[in-house]
Length: 288
Image (cartoon, rainbow, N blue to C red):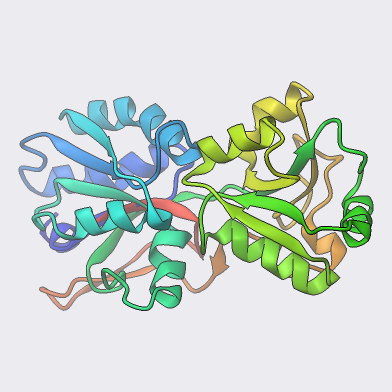
């Protein structure tokens, strides 16, 4: 416990509660941890994909650790507001933050003055997974395929709009890559999180949206929106009719960065720990 928890813990993604609780329960076996309530900071708004997943897995995690856990939403600035709050909390392992590629990989490179050093101030506790993104349009849209949509956008008198969950988000970056590859002009409309973004799409306030499949799934199945492409290595088993961006020559085909197994270095002890992951997922748990 002392080794991993000397810096703030980040849960670096969400997949299943088992993937998350195993490393943390191992900590509980090495010391009297946890002995009091644990707080998870969710740096995104309530109702978003990450928020739903964290709240879904929290009861199982609390039962596994034998301690109460609360989730606190502190949204804004592609996850940096909540992550900064976590970075300023005591480095005792009782504050976790749901970290994403946006808040811990992208933000440090696009912000003139990053509010924290994601490499020095956080330690990855449990990689949880990643979720592909879906490029969606209203079900009533004339375009049935991405090729048709891009052609309509090229012929439009004024730039068509696309929404993302924030300025500088991974969703925006993927769309900018698509624009560059296809030479289509689309105007970016940022929203504060995936929940208001999805509501804006349903209200036809934007022409298209890039959003996690997890968030769009219920609307896709209900026939309220149509997905033109997803960001995955291959087509999803649950949506085999939806092509991946790679099929259109856009390299942003995965929502995580491949790299060697995760290495967590303890600044205080000088040791390291290699985790069994082969990628940095788009979202996860970190410890401060």
